[in-house]
Amino acid sequence: MVKNILEAVLIVGVPIIILVGSGWLMLEVSGRNEIMAQKGDDLPKSLNSRPFGYEVKDVSEYWIKLGPSGRAAEMRFLRMDLLYPILYCAALALGLFIAWERLGFKISILPLLLIVLFILFSDLTENLIHINQLENVIENESYVLRPLLIQIASLATILKLWLLVALGTGLLVLSGMICIGFSKQIS
Image (cartoon, rainbow, N blue to C red; front, side, top):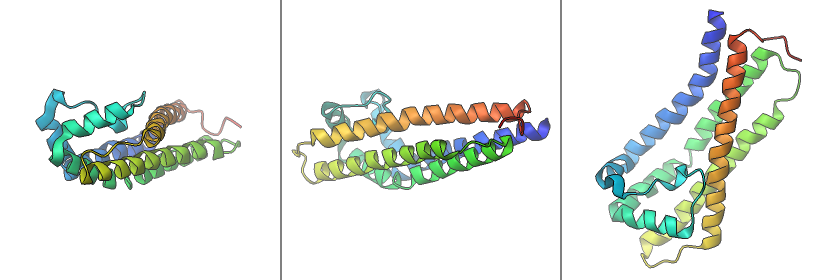
């Protein structure tokens, strides 16, 4: 039973540590945490964590309130954020593989891995569009954001966040099954 619990903690813990730890590290190294602390409550919620998306006016307001040094920190963060989804998606896939193997499922894990890939591509799409649009704003403050690109980035953000919640919940359920001893009983 203790082995089952330790295994379950590992399956869920590694992705959480990578998600939270590397996310925090990116915030610190990019200078984004410092900007967020300076701006306080005046700064709207960051774009990449809005579960119901955003519109052009929200992006414009966020980037304007960041100011020049905040936009530079945001750009550093976004560039680092191109590697971040690869790390956390690899950790999620590893957790799924271990849980799947441990539980002895005979059905294919492929649909779950496709969800991981969809999360990865959604996050990368969001980041690449933000980088593109923010580069233009940094070069020319009167640049007009492209509504279609912002809509695509917003949809990518929504999909990324909700699929992460669903997959994380699934990983918790699989870990719970391991804890209570369902392993090798389900075909």
